[in-house]
Length: 319
Image (tube, rainbow, N blue to C red; front, side, top):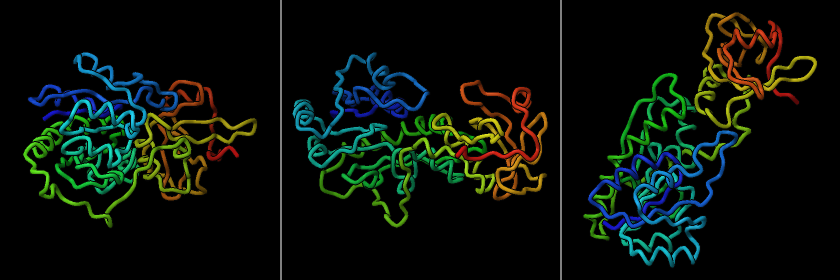
């Protein structure tokens, strides 16, 4: 198969490396010229581009793969299939028609659940215990095409978004290779894969800074999941509402505290060397690591040396 790879983010790297090492002919990589920065956490400018450079294959930096000029470049390669992962652009029908077999996309969830840009984060935040990867035959609607191959895994207790995303990226290698083989044998007419049930679909929209705000009326378990899900960006944040001025805090590690009786959500119930225990809408949250604005991550006892939080203090919005 004559393949064009389309991707930008690190999630695509294991699958793309496997495709490069396979018997198929990789014609080129299509990627964004300048991927968007993610908050203050700057990784490689384009991790896929850095990986691809060693292959010696051509690179097409296309910020709009659906533009007429992009179509002219893609047609010159006469591809059989587009292999898409972590790309950030939706391929329109005119674009898909350039490749003889259209395109496939590796997605980091068990579709139709968690369609969208942040499936790993939302699966953790919603408290899922199982997730996986799905390879679909691309249709114009976002993450809605028929499912060609899947792989499932349990989400480990305490596993955060970066760790789970790394595991899922590796899990996606074999499903991608299997899907390419399916398309190679396809007659172009017989329906492929399993259609998604729209009634089972849920969304995983792109993360925004505001998603990181702690709502202390939520149960403690939900906040623990939020902390795991929103690492490293936007982070899960609140404010210590002391009299002089609020101090912005990013919560880095926490657990449900079942020993302490909760009162008003956001109220500090107990302070010791191990944790700052805060009331929530259900049970209490024991904060064990946190990061004051502009400072490094601190264990609870380190934090308390410089920030004398006391029982009865409040955490919440600074407004």
